[in-house]
Length: 222
Image (cartoon, rainbow, N blue to C red; front, side, top):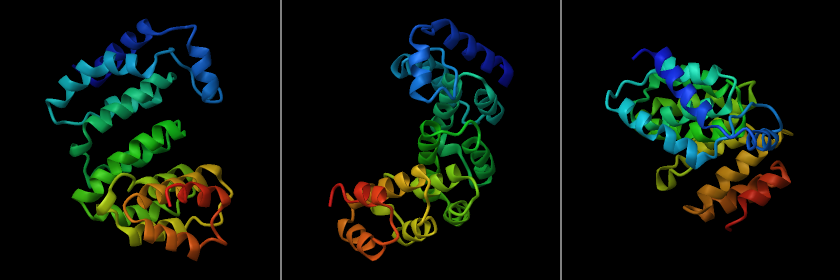
C-alpha cells in the first residue's frame, strides 16, 4: 500500500467515526486554530491501533505518510502522525532530525510538540550527537523549536544531562513567551523528582532571571 493509499484509508476511517457535535468544542479548546472530526482520544487511538501495529512490523518509518497527515486540515490526522512517529521512536535516527524539525514547525501547538519531544529524548540516549543539535535548537527563532529543546529530556530521570539542561534553560531566560517559560518550569519540575537539590540550587542562582511562572512550576515538588 502506498503512502497516499494509507493516508486516505485512515482519513476516511477517522472522518466516518467523527462526532460533528463534539468537533466545535474540541476546536474551541484549541482556540479555533484547527478543524476537528470530533474524536475523543481513546476512540481515535482504538481506531488507529491495528493500523499502527501492522505498520510497525516493517520497521520502516514512512515519513511521506507522516507528512501527509501533518498537512491535513484536521487535527486528528496530525495526532495520527504523532502516534505513528512515536510508535517508530526506536527507528528514528540522527539523520531524521531535519524531518523532526519540520514536523515540529508544522501546525505547531503544545499538543503535538509536547508529544513529539519524547522521541527526541529517546534518540539522545542512542546517539549523543542529538544533544549538540538541541543546543542549536535552544536558540532557534521559532519558539516551538526552543520549547522542544527545553523539554526533550523530560522523563529521562537519572539519564538527564543536567549540564545540558541548565545551558538550554539559561539560553532562554528573559523570554516573555508563555510557552517558553512554562516549558522551563515543566523541565525543572520534572527533574526535581530525580535531583531536587540541583533544581533548588539552579532556581536560587537564576531567580532574578527566571519568570514567576517558571519558578512556580519548577518549585512545585521542592
